[in-house]
Amino acid sequence: MPLSRLRLVVRLACVLVTFVSADVALAKKNPSSSPTVTAVPGAPGVVNHSALWDEFVAGRKNGTESTLLDFSYAGYHHGEVGIPTPDLKVFVVTDFGAVADDGKDDQDAVQRTIDAAAANGGGIVFFPPGVFQFFTDIDKRVAMTIPTGHIVLRGSGATRGGTVLFQYHHGIVLSPEKEKDGFTTATGVVPLLTFKGAAPDGARKVLTPITADAPRNALVLEVADGRALRPGQYVTVSVGDGIPAAKDMLTPYEPPKEWSRLIRSGVKWNEIHQIKSVDGNRVTLAEPLKIAAKVAYRSFLGTFAPVEEIGVEDICFMGNFLGNFIHHRSGLEDFGWAAVDGIKNAANVWVRRVSAINVNQVFNIDTVFSSSFLMIRSAGATGHESFIQSRCSHNLIGLYQDESEGVLHNFTIRATSAGTVA
Image (cartoon, rainbow, N blue to C red; front, side):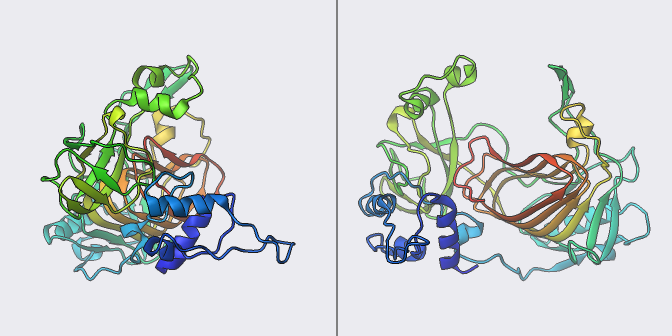
């Protein structure tokens, strides 16, 4: 999508109460420029001029906070470039022993193909048309694993005549199931596909404290020590003390007593960013803040070391879950047929032209930055989760079709995610 078109679409998605036809790319280059205002429908010549837009333009010019936030940086490489057709070596799964439509398990062959691409430093794992089977042996259910970045899984189409990755048996529920309020829950499962090239889990390492308050929409941060920072580096803007942050956000209201975790710990976040430039102890971000970074919150820049350039396209993921779903009745029903679980600690990911049929979890991504998920279709039996993202920043999700019998958590943005455009 052209940059100006994306900027306009993103603005219209975010500014729900005003109608403008300005080019956001122009506004980014020249914040003082005024948009072309549009006539109110049904009232020719009557202009609906937005005070919110004026406030936004002034805030961009003066570095002050505005009511509206700038969501125009969402998507693969901030939406500044299109999703690529990478010039990488192609590894065809049938060259490694996979056979379409033979009813036999293809998992080992596909994993050999992925491993060969990873050993090459990257590559395209290509699936010809047909049905490739996985988890046919109930005693051998291990997720296909992508171990590094610069890997693209590419099929021959996500509809009739294309590529189907068919999961016969359900995955293994990894975590113990716990009974609570009549429900049985589980939090881990062996999915069909996962990614293990992610950075280690654990607390974010502090790179440097933030030493001056920065409002929402700010691009420039004052830090204690900029010597360890460099242009292009990925960082988190994180909060160390969530209690004053929660108080600021809730004022003038008091949280109800049922919000015990919020009262006890406050709110915390790790908003992911990329550094544009460093000038001494002044750091300019590539994307404006979505949440204010204040000294009172003990705000800091933290580490983020993602894998990059992962693509999934033109594939149908099909499970064998045929419905009768009851929420949290069992881990099997919640997560047993999980298509993609674990795109984690990654940047500049794209998923496009993908379908999922008869699975109870389609995509589960965690700590993913500046990525695009487009043209995804869900169909078949009632399931648990469709598209779930946690702790993510500046992602674009669009053209998502749900044609299933019903998904409980269809589209979920949660757990400190910021800057997402849907």
